[in-house]
Image (cartoon, rainbow, N blue to C red):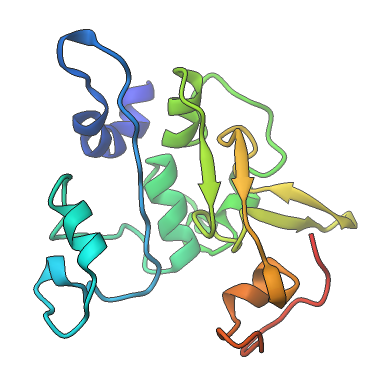
Length: 189
């Protein structure tokens, strides 16, 4: 049953996680970029100078084609991280994590490929926006001063420094000079 739900993710990550001759587990670094074009050197853009990313890419696997199963950002991330294709109306919404993983008990199947790594001896750290909320946390609607993890069983540690912006959401919509554009949240986590 696990393979049925996680096959797309396993095909993507097993290549990176299998160690030759059963030696130590390799480190795995997954970098997700949201709503950006691949305009860096490794993708052929010579105007943008990204020497460190280009060098790093030369030692790993660079994906040149990417397709999403859901055309909205949060729902697409939910599908990618959980390996589940949309079957219900809530799978098509940015609130998919809220509907299916937030506050849920740990089940037999991992909630995400990250959870699978964690169950198999990896120490998992989330840095920045990987699920839907900028810091992987959402406000509890029943207790507004409390936050809930979008992937409660996946992370050993979540790291987000909101710095001069004061909150993760402000940092997400913020400018380098510390001002905030777009939506902003006045409360801090």
